[in-house]
Length: 458
Image 1 (tube, rainbow, N blue to C red):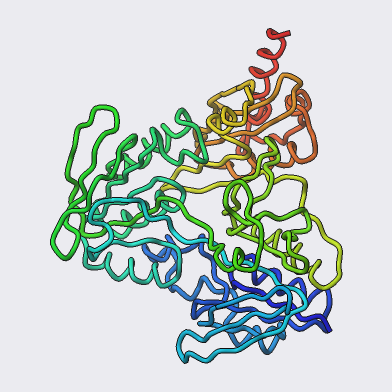
Image 2: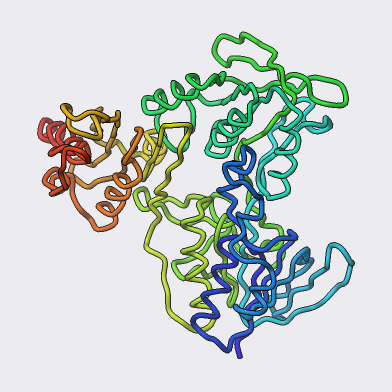
């Protein structure tokens, strides 16, 4: 009987445990988790603040008893790993509530410890009450409770968590300002020209948006009252009222335990794994937000922070840990999407800044169209931007619009993964009906400016 010990009960760790049991029903699986809850959707956390998701525990797919009674998994909650001995193949654990210590043997170990919020060096942010991060279920509970008594909020950081949390604080009835250090919103997802539509949508719903702006200090007595911000270009300062400050300035991986065990970190300082999700230490695997993996387009290692990739890596870990054979694709596309108020924004592949850092100069095409024929009522704006190299290989895309965005980005992701060229995309046979979509979809029309640019270069 193979004994698999998994550290972390998020999407990656739980998926690893379930796939280990699916692959070998006789295997023994132990999942160890610091939190008092089994797996839940972290991506759904912002929506518990506004009660779009009415109950916090709705985010949990299964209660703790399910793991024992149905999945036959030994789930240890409120338990931390204090030491790993890869030679003896043991982990030492400690129950956070009772203090009870235990040594557990393993045949295979999966490290799925995830990540934690980054805390930027903002004056006064360490000691005042009213400062929040959004990473755990308890974080969401605390923010929702504080929001019931608050009137104003400042969100620092306009990545995915920042913009989604800001939207839900507005829906809760608060006056919200969002502050982003870089020149545009969601900068790791879409380029500034695409982010313009998102900023317009946020302002339309009463939100104050400050880009290219640094949060310099959190002001107030024992509790936060204001946030001092400074425009990075003009150096103009302003004080924003804040009953709540939510910091969404990225994450850092939990790697201390892995490093103590001798596990190698990669160039990003996340855990380095191969296509089988193996680390450099025999019989130790890793998956999810604590790992890095090659980018499909650039080949460079990139941190993993998406649920879709976490579950795929977890599946690979679980199958391989019990003697199966599974591999990740040679690179990750990082296909991503979110919705802010009424607008959807999606992307696959690198942004222009990421292309530049990788030394790649893509050929770019962009068009703005409608989700329906011009003559049919109800059509909604959709803008698409696509990247190719001079040989016609599709390198990525970004889409912002009010409907049909997720399906279009999925088509481009499929095109990239299957090796479809920009020339083949131009002639892709798409569906048509006046009430649904036009005869020439923006998905295919966007290939035309790219093809013209490639022809001119030749």
